[in-house]
Length: 343
Image (cartoon, rainbow, N blue to C red):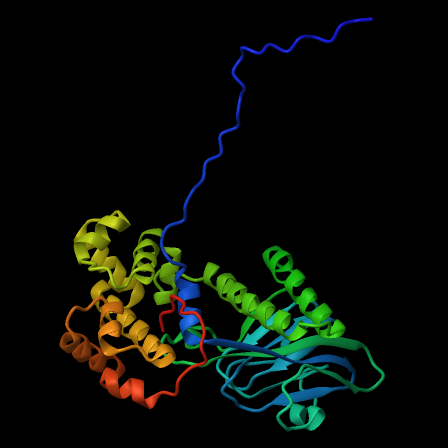
């Protein structure tokens, strides 16, 4: 019987070294969305057999539709020269609240969607079945909106944002999310409304990400997130807006000399770095006043000001009213943990 080989005890034990990388700076897009108060809603699951058509009036909401099965045609007068074919797996977002309609064929007749689902204050997701005996089209219909104004986020998007389901990145990132939405809406298990809300928040972020990937680097402020050095500066400002940032310190952190940094930031973001920082600080303070009714001295410190007078002047210039009047004019928000939101 052979002996087992002896294991030497004087040899050092090899260990795998793990490198932990800390991602510094705030997530700018999350910060902006938190401050704007993104609200999302799934208002119906549709099972439609041709012939069918449903229209949507102009509204303050950004609508979205995901085609789970079949196909349909999108008509949006003033923005599409001809009807747009939407196939299985496609997601379309109409960010500006324009009137439009969907139908099983180009130029088909349509009925106002409210005539199908009825009015009233019921905001729960409904199952909508309509049409004749032709081919089936199934889809999810929902909306996005913001509670607060500040950053013109939706206005940056095109009137019709069409994410094709046959693109590999959409198929891998969007389709599993939409399938999860379908399951939650169908099963309606305990907590389903919370799960739907969170999934649709994720959906909005992924829509913005997908759209951003196709944008030129200098098209607007949001596309500045694609520039690593300017993104670094934005992240630092959003993480600690109360820090006494200067043009010199921001440019050094971004890895650029001062003049090229200032020029690139202004070109991509649309305003100089310190102007952006002041606006960021004032909107951060406004949210704290609105949600937590902070004393003015605390709001001033949150915005990086030692002087209440200087803070009050800057606040009025950016927000339009003195901070005390702003605090009195806004209702108290429900008690909740403060978050690092911007606008």
